[in-house]
Image 1 (cartoon, rainbow, N blue to C red):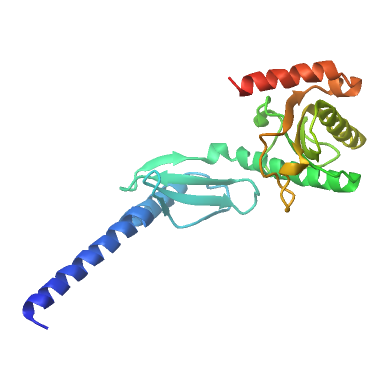
Image 2 (cartoon, rainbow, N blue to C red; image 1 turned 90 degrees about the vertical axis):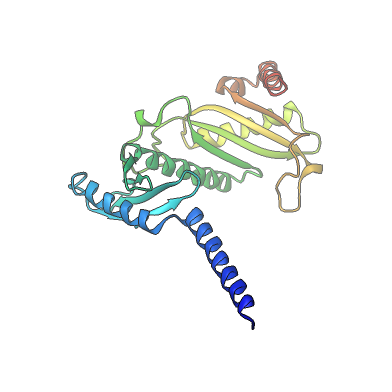
Length: 249
């Protein structure tokens, strides 16, 4: 190998190493900045939340916002999970401790998802249902940190939704599904804020039971309980028409 070829090879290797290091820093952050973030986190926690039994992870880099994060949690609390964020110089940016109640809310959402599956199975429904928190009320007004959830005593009203299939979906199919959902939830004494439903043509049903497309389906949102109890097709149609107007604006 000639001297010129050796020089070219050396330069190529240096350039390749530079490119690799560049991408490592871009996607995984600067090692020195991580050290600074870890040090700053230690200093911050030495004067904050000293009454908690905290565990923290090492700093990691988020290339989306160029920030270094340190995840922290309390061993004695299921919901006290938060993070501290720092810039590349280890300067403090944000503490998410005050937002930890959102972790309770997330657990509540998962609890309602599991409860919906349980109710659908126990009631022998031939379609899917979902339950979700009443989103018109801020969860901070009815949830407490580390709260346990009881299916017989939910902390809030819920919004109920279903998805079913029919040969030629119609408002009658929607009302039929809404009534079935109303009945099974009434049996469980679950307070419902409003009901929604989606009926998809059998022709649009895939082999795995999902929908290939929803464009040929009929759906309705936020139906009051009274409309279902009264079987009021006229009011159901008004809600359906209003929803279509908003959808196609």
